Each structure stands twice: as C-alpha cells, then as structure tokens.
Length: 169
Image (tube, rainbow, N blue to C red):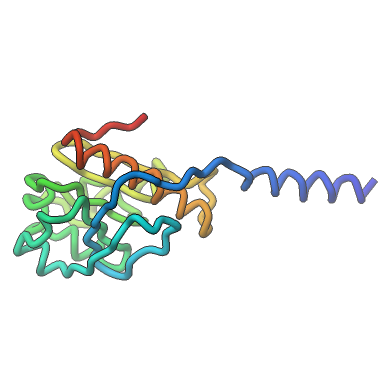
C-alpha cells in the first residue's frame, strides 16, 4: 500500500513539471539588461549590459527591449525613471519584482510603498501604456519554469518589434 502511495506522489510531481515549453525560434533579438543577464535556452537572443545611468541618458533605443534584474528594481523605481518608462520606444521588463508595475511608472510612488504583487508574475513588462505579466508554470520557481517564462517574453518582444503593439496569443 505504501509503495503505491509513494509511486502516485512521485508520478504526480513528475507530471507537474512535464509541461510544453516551446523555445523561442523567432528573429534575432537584442535586449539591454541592467544587472546579470539571465540564463536562457535561446541562441538567437543577445544580452547587452546597461546601467541605470544609461537608462537616464536614454541609451537603449537600439534594443528590442530592456530587462531590469531584481537587484536593481528598488533604484529603478525611483522618480526620475518613471517618465522614461512611460515614454519609451522600447518595452521595459522588471524581473522578479515583489511590487506591481505602478512602482516603476508612477513617479509619486516608491518601491517600498507600492502594492505587493498578487498576480504571481515573474516578469512584469510595460510598453506604451500597456502592462503585461508572465507567470511561472504552477508558480514553481526553478530553472525550467524561469526559462519558459523568458521564451514567452521573447515571442511578445518580437511581435512588438514588428508591429509596435503588445500582442499575446
């Protein structure tokens, strides 16, 4: 009896992580990144280092998007950046934020005082008055679910690159 229970538990856990996670196979993307570049499966995505000072100086126009990694979120939510995100010609994506996107686009709201993220989104993007979030599969945070999240993001960034619109299918 115990044997069958253990088998069911192990099988159930294995099935939970057996999800379809397609690789992004679209066109080449160049993404600016503030912080350490993420570990992704794609070879057609390049990460170019940026600083927050580069963001203030608007040195990101040649990119298909900009990622701001977790360790820089608090500073990236400071008032001088809000208008930059709101007026940007490229999408900004905030990685593993504990706060809602308003922490970044509302210049009167600090990171500390913004509402906590309830959606569970791992990636929070903002582009031309549109917010988009990408959650982890079953809210499980591991290498496979994080890489899947980035693959879905890359698909949306490619659509923005060619259409100028946020389209999620």
